[in-house]
Length: 360
Image 1 (tube, rainbow, N blue to C red):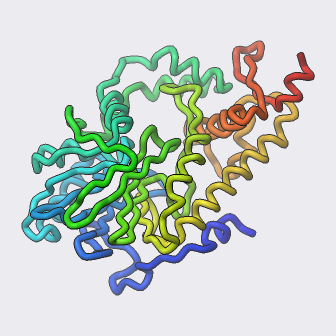
Image 2: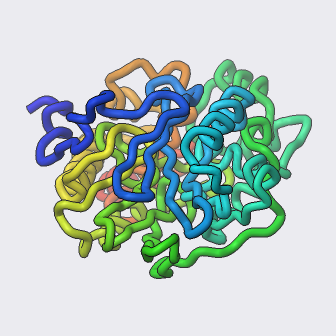
Image 3: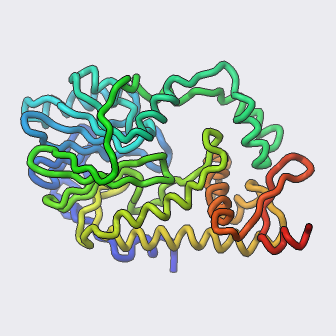
């Protein structure tokens, strides 16, 4: 069974029959429920191209959920939205699911434009705020060490050094110095409806999805996407992270949602089939873990595993791919199935536990 067909099992797309097309165009909106609008903005990420944003009627104003990248083009599109679709009402709250630039990039601008407060979880606000302020003239030694231990070659390391450090701040407007904290299980009142905060981990530190029982809508952010697997990676800021372990455990928090809930993802189309999609994502990661376990009858570096995990060209995305590989390797370590050792070149090698014990 092909991967594409597998992804589609159990999913349906309720906006497919919309008279203007299955999704809104730039600066246009589709109404999903009264007072719940779907907006899309272009983003410079190959393969994604657009991010879905959401406008929720909030009394005498609107709550924005996610914002898009820092971009004069997107600011101009937002101004068109303000003029055409808000009924003369202001933005009164900015709610960001997580710190990634396509989600928080214009939060500072919207905050200044409307004097609207920012709502986030502590983990996402503090991490984004830290990255915005963290800029150095050279790539820090611990970042270099992180990628060298993965097995990056001298040429690959030179490219990382040439890329600089602190590029996050270029993709975001200034993240407000103060915010309103959201906590898992909170009910956020937006207009006439309560939205329950569901915390996901792995893709980002404390990702907030939002579920409204009254409207039967789930704003899933990047935690559950319909046609691609969210990126789950390990990076220098938390080099021993259990990203995949945390991600898979997060699915339990969605278990009580109804089967027919409309899922409003950050990328891709609005869909129905949350539990089928979660089941697929679990299988997808388990298949990759199984591939690794079969191969780790001999020591391998993280870069050695990339051809096993990725069949497409990853030349331009090597750090992302390596981060995903390490997330899977760390999960196998969390399960006690493999061990990690430093080889003579100072690079981490991974092998099945019984192989590592036999080599002692």
